[in-house]
Image (cartoon, rainbow, N blue to C red):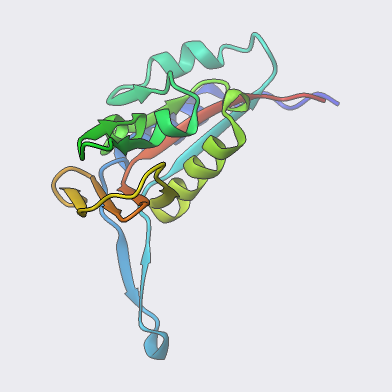
Length: 171
């Protein structure tokens, strides 16, 4: 079964909306007795097509973007060294921009979970490989579009960005 071709202008409009929402702040609304609820304002786009359809070429043309070149969990998230220094991951470079993932299927399973967690909740945590004696708190969601916290042996990243990812459609 062939997939119908999407008109070029339609894809351009979707990508423009994704790009323009990359720095937007969350939308808050009152749910009455349930309290305040925050909804992310970022739009994420996934392009699923067969090999050779021009996905990579299209992704390279996206302005204000960061192309993901590291496909491991620590390379995407970054970490705090045992000396207390920040080791930046791809997410911090993409904060406030559009994270571009070419060939989504190449990500490791943990990396996919981390990316999806960040896309939906704008936060992800993981265990550090050591126990930190002092806390770590850097960045600001309002100023930098990212924040990192580390306590004891837990690392938590908060980031605001849009994402355009491509993958292969396998029949």
